[in-house]
Length: 313
Image (cartoon, rainbow, N blue to C red; front, side):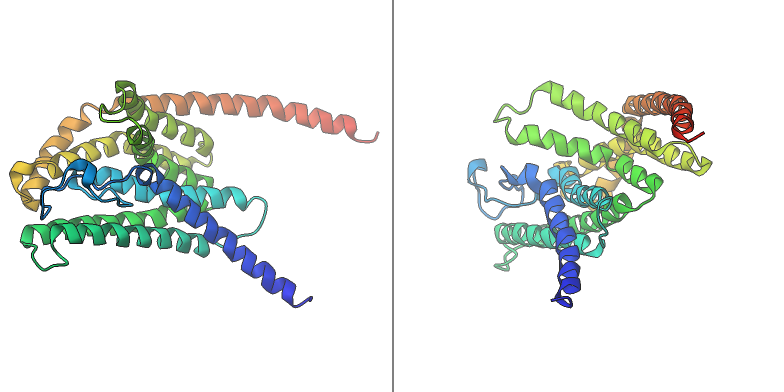
C-alpha cells in the first residue's frame, strides 16, 4: 500500500498536465469547431455549395491563414497559462501538457487534411501541381503554427514573469483574431457587427499593456520585453494584413514569388495604418506601472508598522 502511493502520485502528476494540455488545445480550436464547415475552395474537384462543405476542425483556406495560425498557436498559450496557475498549488511537470497539446493538434490536422485531400483529388490521384502546392503550403503552415504553440506553452509556463509576459504580448494579436472568430461563428450570413472589428483592432493594445504592467521594469533587462512587446503589437497586425493580402490574390494564380512580392508591397502601407494600438499599449503600461509602484510604496510602510506593533516590547 505504501509502495503504491508514490506511483499513484506520479501518474496523477502526469495525467493532470496532460489533461490541461488537451483542454488548452481544444479551447484554442473551439471557436472554429463549433461551426466549422470547410471554407469554399478554389481548387475543389467538384462544385459544392457553401452549406454542403464538409466539417473540419481547422479552417483550411488561404483566406483563413491568419485565423488558422491563431487558433493553433493559442492552444499552447492557454495550456501554458493553466499550467502556470496550477503550479502555484502543486508541483507539475511540463512535458505531459506539451504532449496533450500535440495530440489534439495532430488529430485536428489529420481529420482536416484528409477531408481537404479528398476534395482536391489528391487521394484519387487526379490532383494537379497547383492542388499539391496548395495542400503542402497549408500543411507546412499548420506544422509551423503547432511548433510555435509548443513554444508558447513553454514560455507562458516558465517561472520567469518576463518570459511569460512576453509570450502573452506576442500572442495578443492572435488572441484578438480568436475572440473575433467567436462572434463570427454565431453571426449568421450578415457577419458580425462592425463594432467587433473595432474591438479586434484595439484589444491587442489592451492585452499588451496589461502584460507589461505585470512584467514591470525591474530589473532593467525587462525593458527589452517592453520594446519587443510594443513592436509586436504594431508589426504583427501589419504582417497579418500583408500575408492575408498576398495569399488572397487569386489573380496571381498561386505563384508563391508573386504572392510574397504583393505582401511585401502592402506591409509598409499597413504599418502606417496600425500603430495606434501600440500607443494605447504604451499608455496603459506606463500608467499601470506607475500606479502599481505607488501602491507598493504606500503598502510597504503600513505592513512594516503593523509588524512592529505586533512585535512584543
